[in-house]
Amino acid sequence: MKEEKNVKLYERFIFALVLLSIVALFLEQIPGKGLILRIFTNAVDALLILILLIETSVPIIQTKYKTLYIRSNWFTLSFTVFSLLTFAYAKIFHSHAVASNWAVLILFLRNLVVGFKIYTRIKKLSSYFERFTANPAQNILLSFVFLILAGTLLLMMSFSTVDEKGISFIDALFTATSAACVNGLIVKSTVGDFTLAGQIVLLFLMQIGGLGIMLLSFFTVFLLGKKISLQDKMLLSYMLSEDDSSSLRSTVLEIVAVTLVLEAAGAVLLFIGFVPTLGLSAKNLYYSIFHSVSAFCNAGFSLYDTGLETFRLNPLILLTIAFLIIFGGIGFSVLKELRLFFKERIAHCVVKEKTAYKHHIGLNSRISLSLTAGLLLTGTLLFYGFEHGNSMADYGLAEQYLSAFFQSATLRTAGFNSVPFSHFLTPTYLFMCAFMFIGGGSGGTAGGMKTGTLSVLFAAGKAFFAGGDKPVIGRFQVPEHKVKSAVLIFFAGIITVLSAIFILSITEKHNLVHIVFEVFSAITAAGLTAGITPLLSLAGKAVVILLMFFGRLGALTIMAAAVFKSDRVNINLPQADIAIG
Image (cartoon, one colour):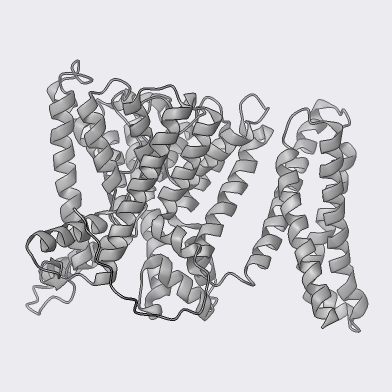
């Protein structure tokens, strides 16, 4: 009993130490830190290295078959030795002036050490969490937290910024959250403030955030032919909304394959579109890949400070970006059904078979496709109607319709712009807020409350006003728990939006319409701004960070992650007769 208690105390100590070490890692990036901070960070690092030494050496001392143990754990031991050597090297040479030729090498090794420190700390923290995190929603939430923290730290480092000074913690956290949550709101210029290394960090954050770090982890496991536990299958089923666990492997592999294929195709088309301005260059290839990933993941980051306004006369670029956004936003299950649907019908046409078709477009896909098409058309007409004589007054007719379609495609979740957003009419901002709140399809890279949620709410409202109690979509009845979930998502979003608008109206001195637009853009992962994002106060940035995180995870995931297991007894209480209306 005493030994078990000591083990628990030791685990809590390790847990607290790892948390402190992560804090110290961020503090180390502060330029000109004082003596107390230096002592604290060095003490935490030294204690962590000491524990690493103890945990590595004790098993070797205790085992009788030392050679066999070393052979079996050669990678862990090699990693420990390398960590110790690079740690000592960095501490010795950190403050010493060296020749310019050696400075680059030492800087590289020093940053490599930081990378290994991130890996060991987060790995240790993750392994600790695995012992009590059986809730799939908690796993997803924690994975995004770790991804954002890792991205924040990398963006704070000197190699990520043009001035080699890094950026502040709040700006790094804002940018990393925006990239990982595929939002697109920025407080720093992507091309003006970040180096190639910093931009690549953003690229990986967008790709990992768009697909989900847990999904990519399972993809790697499946790719290596490994098996996963029942708990992991439950987590994967929760992420993919897939009831059939036997098809999880093929579903994961197909999602990643479809993503890479569409992003590659988009990059090729963008490369052709960028040739007039960038030529046949490596820069063109990089820009094409960056924008293709950003578009398919609905992230909205651009390597042009004016967005895509420069290319409003280039239909190849705008249409490629628009359709990447649409494909990424309608949901992977819809893409799969479309592929099987057209593949089967093309095969029947080629061989001229008369057998019945096996694959049909399901209800979810029909809802996503029909609402996406309807919203695209409506958004195009509304945007053109309001802005053709305002922000697009100097455009030709073809430019106006192309820009209107592009903004209709991007406003619901992506964050690109081909028209300046700072001088729209008030009705334009308001209808765009509504479209952003709806968002894209479930199971894709889009944000918002999703088209499926809108269809359930519409069905429930129609049933209510018709005097019935059973919502119906087509020939199918909507289950009660789906209606409750849809209502919860809607009202959680509205309450969060109203709360954020109230807070920002106090902390910020901007036009209220612009604040409303910023809030809707943040919570729906749309990433569009009326120009106030870089001007937000510290409190304003903190509010928007929380909105972006809430919008990416969703109300259901966050609430499910907050639920702890408890023994509940259902008791039927007397019904209340409350006067309403």
